[in-house]
Length: 191
Image (cartoon, rainbow, N blue to C red):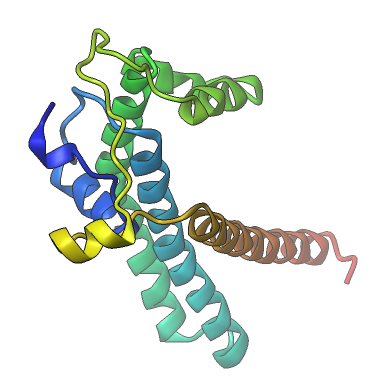
């Protein structure tokens, strides 16, 4: 097993690894590394979107700060595109699926659920066609002190980060839905 990948990763380590391996479509990625990368990505991107929404509410829709936030958001989405695609392919490899399984995302409704079910599965316990097992050893507080590593996030920390991500997604979605409904009603002369 690769010595660099013995210990489980923190959120920042998952984000760093995702960017270091941004064009590596071979190999495997553990479930925890994948989801920690995705949570970090969502918090950063949705956090910026929420910032843009707040600026819009405070300064009005015509503010330059809001436009800059939107441009930065688009740039961030482009920056995250390849690392997200690569880590998703490696995660699919971890459960023994081809990276092309990602294309299921284009099948309306059903494809998303089939892809998601593969992304949440536990990885293959042994070597598969895509490489060695990816299970990591959790870094305990004792190991953290002895080895100078960052501790493995607890289930509580993982749930908190997931909840933050979900709340940010809901806020952004709700704001976009309300704005779209407002434009739709105004264009029909209803308001």
